Length: 309
Image (cartoon, rainbow, N blue to C red):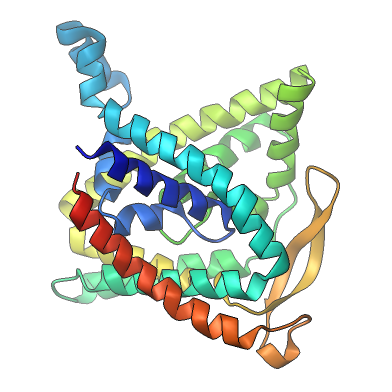
């Protein structure tokens, strides 16, 4: 296995997760590791008792593809740091260009996945429409008011982590829609910086929800791919196409929210034409960024082919 190649894929996934509305699952799919990642996550659970009895920790590590997950996780951590420093700066100063790039990236990804469909029947069309409808609804739904009730924290963790596994849907954006972003984020921060007991409880319950969501949803996705692969590909294509509404290059802020630092940041936005954009539409850079995003998809595909597993 090419560990550098896996780490590079993880880095690309980490950078993607920094962008609201972009999922690392998209990058995992177009670089050829999506199903392997799902199967590795699925392997983590009570079923590990058997390999442990027969071969100890080494057998468990092999069962979950530990080296693969370690390399991918390290790459994702590096990508997250890179994204926080670089991509957030670009989003602050040149937002239409960044959105245009990722708009092109998702368009290219949807084309890439769609081309893998061997045939398109009623089942595939239904899956495509369902994926598009769900993702599009996520981009236009009115955010709810959050709750610090522990059952709600648990559910939000399970749903958000499940969304992160789907190409085209961002886990952090799901938390925003559920109104849980500003419940969970400050709790995690306070549990680390202040050791606040309630915040620590909220953080632990959220992590438990994430673990349950990963264990459950990874099995669902793995089963769908094994038994209804064509429908699964159509569903993922729909997810990516439906998410494009969120990535339109020009959108004006309708409502803001306070982040963990008390700063006002965009919360609800409305898509507009360049002439109605509240800032510099940067038309020429946008027209360059969009095809650049398209090109990256095919470069990532090439990279995935060359570096192998």
